[in-house]
Amino acid sequence: MAPWKHQLTIRVVPSILYWIMRLWFGTVRVEVRNREVYERFFLGDGPVKVVAGSWHRHAVFFFYHFRKVTNGLVMISRSRDGEITAGIAKRLGYDTVRGSSSKGGRDALEATIDYMNQDQERRFCGTAVDGPRGPARVLKKGMLAAAKRTGAWFIPMACSGTRVFTFPKAWDRTILPQPFSRVVMDFGRPFQIDPNISDEDFETLRIETERVLNDLTDGVDQACGYKG
Image (tube, rainbow, N blue to C red; front, side, top):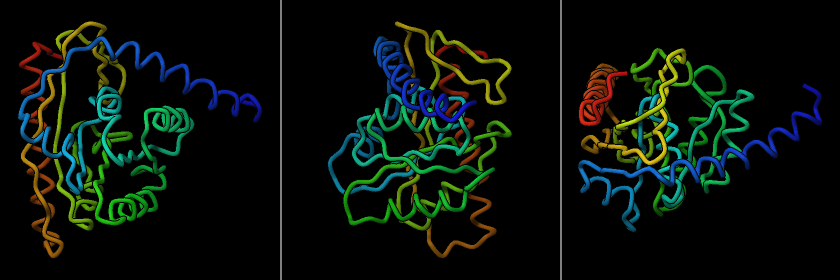
């Protein structure tokens, strides 16, 4: 693609997709399970730090839903598609860092940690913890490491819908709620990670958190009657 066409694309396409997202997802009704966690950690006013992790499958709707969190940061890949996603993120009100487990991940993780450690005000960051290329529903340790090094609460979360579009050829089987449908979201128990945790215990925690995320996913799927 010619440079001028590329620049035009990353300027125009995010604006178009942003308005489509607002019009589309604005019709979706949301049912929140474990509302105490949701209200305390995502809607509260106190100086709490949160690292939220979901599977890549859920990321699009969460990306929209949490647009109003205070001081929210999202990690986005350095791919060409990532440039468009970053443009949408800025329009939704997020700060961004660019990188993923496959490219620029270490720099992005350090930037995320620096962001979370700024002052003592409220901070939020989130990303898909099995992305950007999978395997699906297998947790990578980056966001757990971010929580460990910042003292943030790590919160697993999942969502599903009563009527969704599924991308069956995508590695993560991405879902998008259909207009005027209902989304159910759920949150696991928030936890903090001992900064002196051993490598062995950290791996045990990674495996347990992966299990929790999969249980949450299966639970909201069952509640919505979604069978993938």
